[in-house]
Amino acid sequence: DIAYVNGAFTPLAEARVSVLDRGFLFADGVYEVAAVIDGKLIDNEAHLARLERSLGELRLKSPVPLARIAEIEAELVARNDVKEGMVYLQITRGAAERDFGFPKDAAPTLVAFSQKKNILSSPAAQNGVKIVTVPDLRWARRDIKSVALLAQVLAKQAAVEVGCHEAWMVDADGLVTEGSSSTAFIVTKGGAIVTRPNSQSILPGCTRRAVLALAAREGLTIEERSFSVAEAYDAVEAFLTSASSLVLPVIEIDGRPIGAGVPGENARALRQLYIECAM
Ligand code: PDD
Image: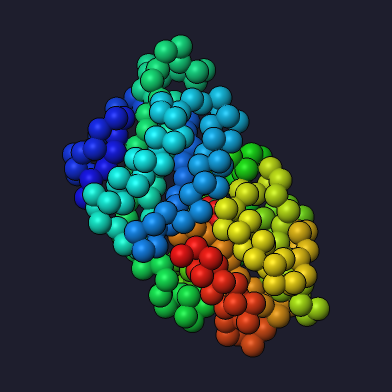
């Protein structure tokens, strides 16, 4: 596989950044993940817009224009012959003598690589997934897609260890924020699709945005509001969204079946619509 590091395409196994890179030392950087379906990047304008916003919030400068990043991503997809999978890209504040404040003249580091993965057809999409809830241990600026992901790593590992696919993180008020790497949704008995409104408490998901637009187009009722774990247990349906998994039905939360314990109608329909629109 070929990766991109600071201006050059290079074999992934030989791709290197400095041990002084601030991404490595301080998690001082941001990232994006976009899906590839049929060799095409999905919803990439939204991902690049969010990248630009994340960079701005950290006062980080991209080493190349956003349009060039899109070209680099497309070139990776082509060179690695990715039909289905994802492209990862990361920008950090670069390598400099270790000091917490911003370095005066470090050049930012841009790294990108691709991974092949089944996205359209997977057992998770077919059968639905199980979720466990965990406390949300993250910092207060979750709207920035920073590479500081330790709380998400621990949340996902907690899920894996109890045979679950994803962890939904819960704030101090007992309200679900989001998944470790996905957006959380429930469907109420009245048929409303509920997801937490965008704020500094969650990452504004690109897939979330696209799915809400499709739901609105279909005339479904949308309630952008927080929901508690108790309300989720009692929902008729639950699902999650992310670039790398599109829409996945949730069939169980903390060992309790959601609805009939099988993938829900709304999750199925929205997944199908999202795929049709993406292609
Ligand atoms: N994660 N919330 C969090 C905390 C995320 O990390 C992600 C994405 C999402 C969904 O956002 P989007 O629909 O734009 O992918 C929500 C990516 C896929 C990852 O870290 O691999």
